[in-house]
Length: 226
Image (cartoon, rainbow, N blue to C red; front, side, top):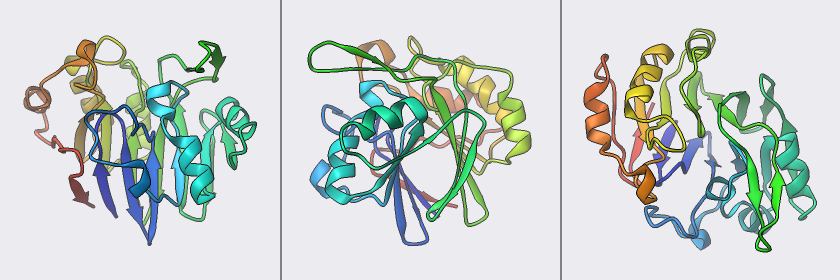
């Protein structure tokens, strides 16, 4: 399994000839190396409904006729726009052709703001467990620290965990370092930082905070294999 990071919270998982993209915020993301025209996913997974996570989902899903996996509210909202969706909710898992997906809790908000400044309620935010090839990837989404991260790590031993460190809207580096301890993942990768001024952080300082010394900063486009 190959996993690549693309700035903000954009993660691609390449497994068994399939490419799954999580939170494809490309247009307007100054930190990404991706271009919408070059992205050809086989599936899209969304953690929550904020615009900087839904991103280019509708365009990509329609262009490539791919499935979008998200909570029920987001799935319903996107289906109204002609997108093929599969709705889930917190604690639920489903085996797809491309891998198994389970949604975990996340403590954050979830809404989509339209071009007319209308705010659409998008249900509960989620973290994402992706399982395939005997490996588990955890994308925490946008979240605060919560103690049940320990249970997530115990129930689903994690190979790679992507954790937000930006502070202000999510966990900051100190809380994310404690989250890493609870999750006990083999590798910790920081995300959701430096995209906007309020979430400016030094990811290398975060890596130094990790007791297990198991962190890795990925530059946009960089790949790790597990």
